[in-house]
Image (cartoon, rainbow, N blue to C red; front, top):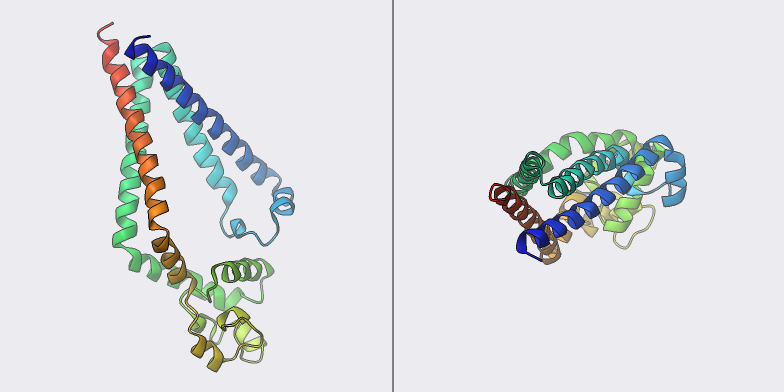
Length: 237
C-alpha cells in the first residue's frame, strides 16, 4: 500500500468517525430541543446545563462536525479537489478561531468579568430566591464549585433573597456552609466568588486543559496536512 492510498484510507476512517460523532450530537441536540422535559427528567432538573440553551449548542456543533466529516470523507473517497480544499478551509478557520479565542481569554479575562458582572449580578439580585430555575441552578453551582455569587457575598446584598430572608445570605456564603448566614459570618468566611473560583480551578488543571487543547490542535494540523497532501498529489495522478 502506497503512502497516498494509506493516507486516503486514514482520511476516510477519521472523517467517518467525525461524521458519526457529529450525527450523534446533532440527534441529541434535536431531542433536547423537541423533548426538553424528558432530558430534564433523565439528567435532573438542577443540572447546570439548564443555564444555557444546550440544545442549540449541540445542534450547531453537531452540524459543523457532520459537514466537516462529509467533506473530508467524500473528498478523500472521490478524490475531489473541491471537497478537499473546502475541508482544509473549514478546519483552518476553526483552528484560527480557537487560537483567537485562547488569546482573547488570556488577555481579556478582566473584561469578561466586567461583562458578567453587568449581566449576571442584576439577575442574582432580582431572581435568586424568587425564580425556581435560577435558584436551583445557582444552588447547584455554588454547592459544587464551593463559591458564593459571581464576585462574592456582596452580590446578594439588598437582593430579593436578602430582603425576604431576614437580611441573611445564601448558606454557601459561609464556611462551613450553614443557614442562616449573616453578614458578619459571610464577611469573615471570605468565600470566593464563582468566577474567580472557576478561574482558580482552571489554573490548577492547566496541564490537563493544555494537553487536551494541544491534542485537538495536533489533530487539526494533521487533518490539514493530510488533506493538502491528497489535494496536491491529485495533480500528479
